[in-house]
Image 1: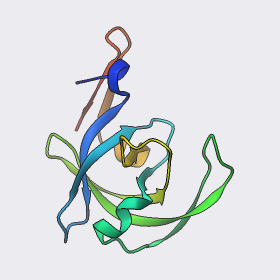
Image 2 (image 1 turned 120 degrees about the vertical axis):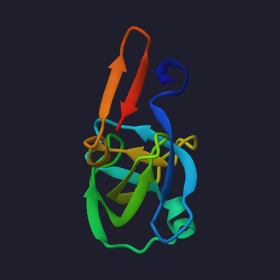
Image 3 (image 1 turned 90 degrees about the vertical axis):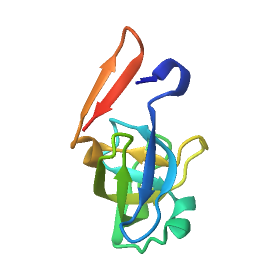
Image 4 (image 1 turned 180 degrees about the horizontal axis):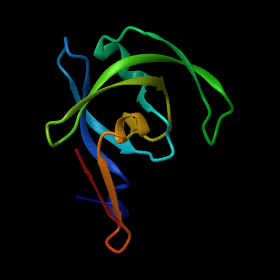
Length: 122
């Protein structure tokens, strides 16, 4: 269980593709994101090949086109999920993945407002 007051909705994840060694990083759970994003800085180190493009709209930018990739997210419980992810950049450097609804729909996310904590269970 993470404490949102201290760290935000961050969770350790391993990112990769089945054929390669995954990278350990932090992912930010974003219930407002329709799908998962990875930082463009990870594309080469993960050996990813684009499968297409998609359009993103964020609170700070108007619509822009981004490459899409198939990635595997592995969560602390050992569960992994293969999802389509767009690649983009953002200002914060404490996480390299934004976990959106295309991954969250496979689990149960619980927020406890009293303790300012969350759990994500698969």
